[in-house]
Structures are given as C-alpha cells and as structure tokens.
Image (cartoon, rainbow, N blue to C red):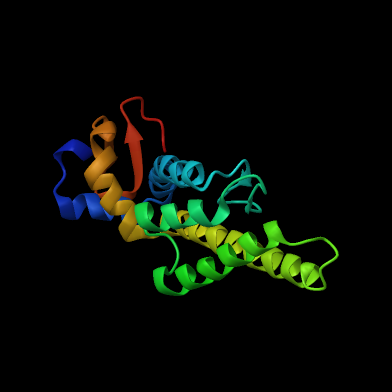
Length: 180
C-alpha cells in the first residue's frame, strides 16, 4: 500500500524523517545550502575577503589589515548576535585602542613589537571564534529535530510525489519507483 508524503499526518512525517537516513541527508543538505546564505551575509558584514567555511573540511577566516576589523565585528554582533556580546565587546574595545595606538607609534618605540603581537593575538582570537560560530551553524543542521522542523516548514511540499510502501518509513520512493 502506497502512502504519499503529502497525505501523511505530522506524526507520520516525523517517522519518515527520523527513520529514513537518505531523506535526512537530503534535507540536511538543503538546510545547509540555505544557511550558507546567512553565513555569507555575516561574512560580508565582517568585510572578509579570505575565508572558507566548509561543513566537511577545514574552515578559516582571515581579516584583511585594510578593513576596520573592530568596527565590522561590532556591526556583526549588533546585526546578527554572533559571539558573546559582553566579553567580546570589552576585548574589541581593547583591540581598537591597541590598533589606534599602533597606528600612531614609531617603529623604533620599545612597545611596538609587544603591541603588534597583542593585536595579532586578538585578531587570531576573533578569527577562531567566528569560525566556531559558522561551524556551529552547520553542526546544528545535523540535528534530527532541526531537520524535521526544516522539512515541515520549508521543503515538504517538494516531496509531494514521494511515498512509502507498506508502512516502511525507512525508505521513500518517487513516482518512478526510484529509492532515495
């Protein structure tokens, strides 16, 4: 007996998602694709030129020295709620002061090297924290409840022609009898 996804109750749809690993993976990929747009908006706000955010590989971001790093991070915190506001805003204020002092400092000043190292260390800290945020977004996409919610809210109408046979929720078929 065939039962089409479009005719299923929410409980049956949940069974299809929870028991069908292939369908989970497909919906997860759609969700990650969707989240990529949000990540790219944040990347644009941060003014990042060099970056790679990949859910399956090494991810990194690098701030360009020519960009207003602290200003862009504060804007991303305010607009998207990334990072820990209180702690990171204090660190950003220190970094902004250090960058301002560094720009006015003579190269032969005895504190030049220390300030340069401090700035590099803080920038690296923020780069790592931002990568953690982005990787966390992708990891969140692997949660079965999140996949189910996304399926119910956004994509289930794309699966109207899919069905199950004989109450076996672990395999979904398309009109062509092709397994997915």
